[in-house]
Length: 152
Image 1 (cartoon, rainbow, N blue to C red):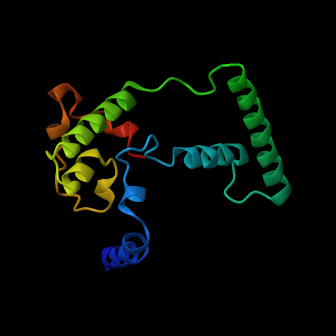
Image 2 (image 1 turned 180 degrees about the vertical axis):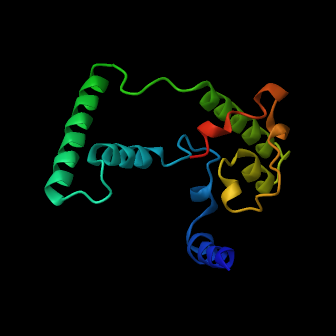
């Protein structure tokens, strides 16, 4: 029943109102909403309560604004504000690039491409069904990256 509601919503909202190019990560540098997740994680970490009082909440928001301003200053000076990317992120980017090349050359149909590059397809498909990423890999070393880093 829940999957039927999701399917109906998806068709009504996304299929009829959004172009495929807007849904696709094919040529997109950003493939997640990690920026929003990061902001909410910072706020939750500072507040240390699910529903803080309004003045406490405002104090935490102001602290995040100050931190963000400091980060902007560091960026302006050419300094880093984040930790270096993990090896698994580079492997994921590499796999996506190979899958994109295979898709554009006709080696993948759209569903195969989506299935191969998706990190979260398990949320909407049969959990018993195996997803095979190996068809985009050059060697078996990069077929299976550390899933713990990508499934939050």
